[in-house]
Image 1 (cartoon, rainbow, N blue to C red):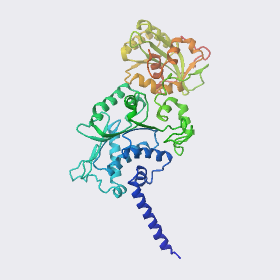
Image 2: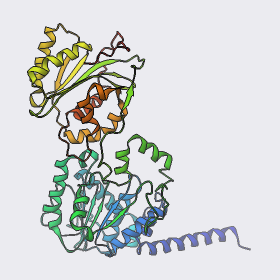
Image 3: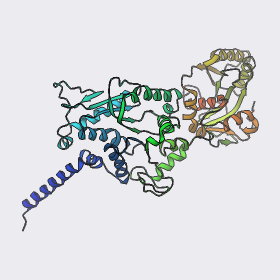
Image 4: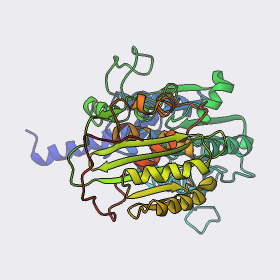
Length: 487
């Protein structure tokens, strides 16, 4: 009969044997390596096995250039930008690796996390020859760079725009080169990323260098789009949509409509996100950067009468014409806790000497409490002249304020498009009330090529200032719900 003490002894032996087997397996595959060095956190599914199999092919050099597109919170960076470089340096301490992210702060965070992996007892048990500096041996160890003691290899982390001068790069890992949708939709930022890649990153690569690119596809002309357009055959592309589209493939066994990681992101949650903002969902979760080829705005909500509310403020937002061909757009609306209800629109190419009194009349007619005017391109002078016209009309109710709009117009319109659709209510028959305005808004294309964007810019402004006028008194009188009095 086996005693209790002997049972405990055997149990410890079995644990030690399993630990040793895990240690030996960890050296031969990134999946096993991650399970061994990240045991308390790493709860793997078929997704992780599939993803890590692709990473293993990259580590072994079977794939020279790999792009991986995956939704947030699915373990993308853990595999690509933390565990993969750590294991590659364990396998070959002479490798020189560069980690790139959208800014230096994010890149340094990856650097510190990789250092903690290499410092861990689990890593040392697998790769005792891969060591970091103790601070007294002459090897570099900072948040930006570390060298491996006794070897030529190491790792350098930089933000986009940072230097790699004089550094040979064997492995280039690029993770989230765009911070968010606004960054990816900014032509300036996209151009900066492309220029940095062409003039800095690529100049440090040699014939045997490998590249791993992992991020969210926000725009068809992001770096991934540009690289695929010019050298598609050179890259292996792996995309994991949050909700499967199409039949199973070599690396994704799901049937159409199944969630990618249901244990953490189920279909109910994903569909709520999709219904809230379809375009963002297609990019961020489905990795479909071309989903916004069509019209930007979905169907607008309409209303017959204004809702009963304890919080009504009459506002106006004015975008003056940038050039002689552009439109002045003034939108008068009621803001309630339920949303934005458009009362009137002035949308015209007439000169300012005509639009200034027209705007003042509009503000007076609807008893507007606050009117915001973009001061760019003569907007400040326009606002002052409107104030003068208001005094002539003896209108002391309307407060006119102007401000400089510093954010990129295209980015603002795109990123706020879902909010415009969700918050803005048009009066029934608005297509007949303001046909030119209606045509501009409903035919505005998401991918550019639009002749004008003044109506869309002004609609965007209304939602940007939604709920930001708490200091303005709530109007005491109710608007006549039966007589909207359109201009």
